[in-house]
Image 1: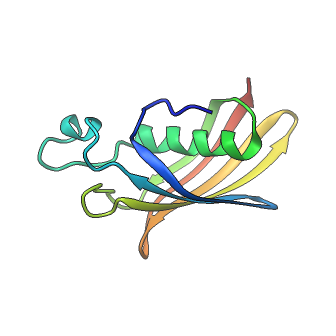
Image 2 (image 1 turned 45 degrees about the vertical axis):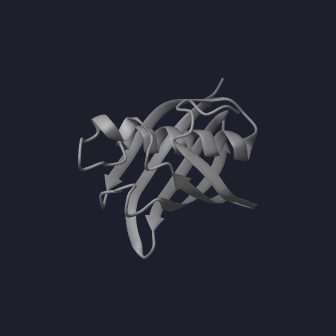
Image 3 (image 1 turned 120 degrees about the horizontal axis):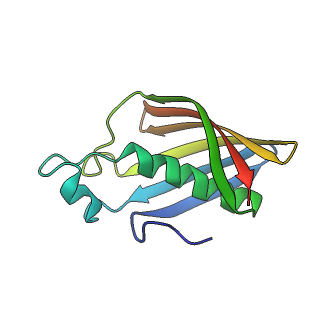
Length: 123
């Protein structure tokens, strides 16, 4: 599966387990997206985090997905790519009636940055 935003992040580790995946990604702090979000004070855009979770879920399931519902998104901490470029995403995955259900936590060091629950349709 190809990344929607080229060179925004690199997958450093990808460990599949029975209930999903744990991935470590490295953000490209010099990516042009941070020039506009926000100049001089870069912050990882929430929509990019959701896209990253989708892409990692596609890799884990080997299926092309379409986001159909986010029932819970909580941004707990700002992700500054200059200070926190290494993220750990824990994605619990289940499939029910052709829908992929995801529960995600994203963290850096000891900080929980994002919690997300979402449903994806298989394309």
